[in-house]
Image 1 (cartoon, one colour):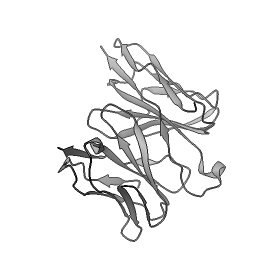
Image 2 (image 1 turned 180 degrees about the vertical axis):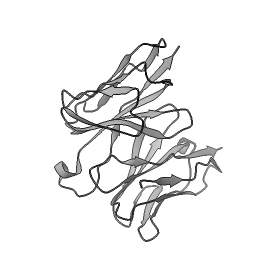
Image 3 (image 1 turned 180 degrees about the horizontal axis):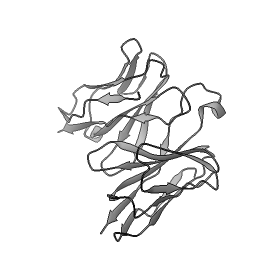
Length: 119
Length: 110
């Protein structure tokens, strides 16, 4: 089955520890994204990548880092510098407009998310 | 400026009612528009794409008004299972990620 997976579903971390969230897709999508969602709030973009070995900061990149060594994978590291990391983290992927031959943006598909709790 | 504004609700409606949500966006050059649905503690899922003057899928109708820079989602004959948060999503010019509104919460009551 084609899709986008995230692991683990729930993650607990002690304050001061770094933690890495996994995101994998087999949809052959060029672009991948990380969002954070707090209770009752909208999605906020952390980082995104449109091509292997390249990524861009989103609106709330401080305290996070990413890598894109493979097209299929876009792991997110929540560092100890992130002051309030407890949240629901969502990964998404999409085709890029210029690779699909469309001038318009393309819909994003989301993984099931990881709930991170800092103890 | 990249803004997508939605009424946060909640909209509490009885089963069978018709309900409409509106969403405004800030850039007149935007070309792609989507509605996503997000259930509690789950990921957002694509409900409908809106590419031209609007489209219909069963009980759901999405419309686009470019002149006024808003899109709408109409749900007819509401079901209990329609209870969710509905996210308005817009593509702004340039190779940038989609911009998500904060969502409108719908509760359909028996």
